[in-house]
Length: 219
Image (cartoon, rainbow, N blue to C red):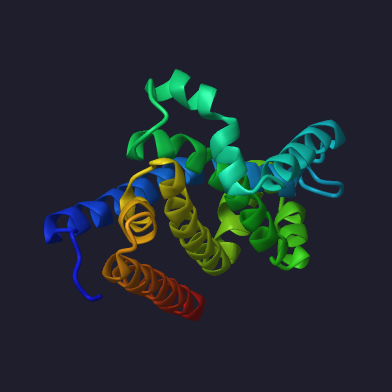
């Protein structure tokens, strides 16, 4: 019952594939999602760059993408994935839907973090003659940095879960290993090992995010 056909090299490669998918998706998703979150805050009614039209476009688009479960999004955009990376199988192919999934999610988390900033700070900045860019760069973002770290921590954990789901369509990583060997070949050891690795990943990332956010908030 405790034997397995998966080698240590296969398992380590699966872990590296998962880290690769999470790292690349988080990096590109953050480059897209953080500006989206800032736009949502500054263009909303009463924002420093209020734009009802722009807000009315961005907000529903984010809601539409976020309303799709990742597994459905993964399958729905297969033609687009093939167009971008010339394949729909493997770690590189999984990164495309992962980015589309995580970018609006990060955008919404960033929006929530920025909305926690005391409005009085922004009003004081505007009263001192700060430009909208200065308000955002020197007041809004620095005040929210602790919350932003926790938001990115939450997004990273969400990505880990999404990479596991990507394994159902051959996305690679520990999710793929769990499906192909653990589920389809009834390999209990692989399932247990996958669960343990995912728990360690999540606990480690959450603890690191909490510690970093706590240290920053003390300054």
